[in-house]
Figure 1 (cartoon, rainbow, N blue to C red):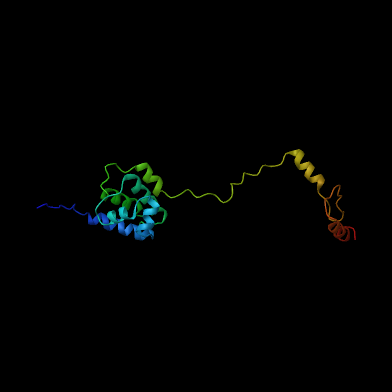
Figure 2 (cartoon, helix red, strand yellow; figure 1 turned 30 degrees about the vertical axis):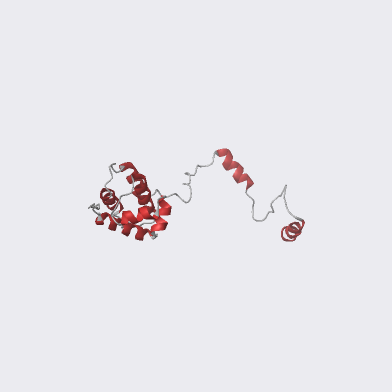
Length: 159
């Protein structure tokens, strides 16, 4: 009589995978598609029958961080626990983890203004000579306009 032996299931890891997938908001098929594996592979992970390979696990963790599936403020701790539970033969890449969980540097909406520089004597003299008193009209040497705006200008400026 032939005896069948079944591999021992890792229910703790399976539960972690199931919880993570549901926190991400994907079905087994949806997660499988995102990770480039079969739905059966995801089912086996969640059933505690097998573990993802390093690259698949990294992609899963990146997706979970992107979707904010880990508890806020505990991302690094939960990633370490998942990595350890997945019984990876490769150590967790600390530089990759730090880059993944460190907050992004906020972009400045406007560039920093430079410190104003006082005008030189020649610039100040040119500015003061160009000032116009309120009683005099400006002298316009060139003006680009359409015929309709020209008639409006004549009425308001010379009228």
